[in-house]
Image (cartoon, rainbow, N blue to C red):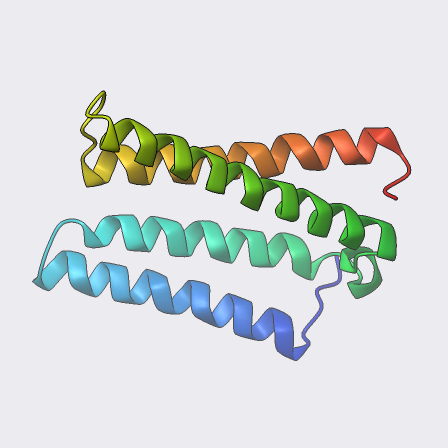
Length: 129
């Protein structure tokens, strides 16, 4: 199996290995939560190994997929603004008094799921005009 050794892969792998080392040092000397940093560094290193086995041309996006991502992001942004407007209205009318963590999680998950669903929709739809 042939591995790519270009600058992008080496930087990606370096960040993953650095996260592993920083997580283990944090776990040993400061806090047990450093193990999460080490695990995420290991996952990042494994992803880097996976991408190092593929040619660079496979990972490049074409114009259609870029346009699909842009369009899904555009409509996802408007969905997030609509959710923020509804939540603000509910707060003004005192129907719902949100905390920071309520609003943060609702907004983030709305944006992520809208983007994923809209990407799928525009990919199946075919034409993006």
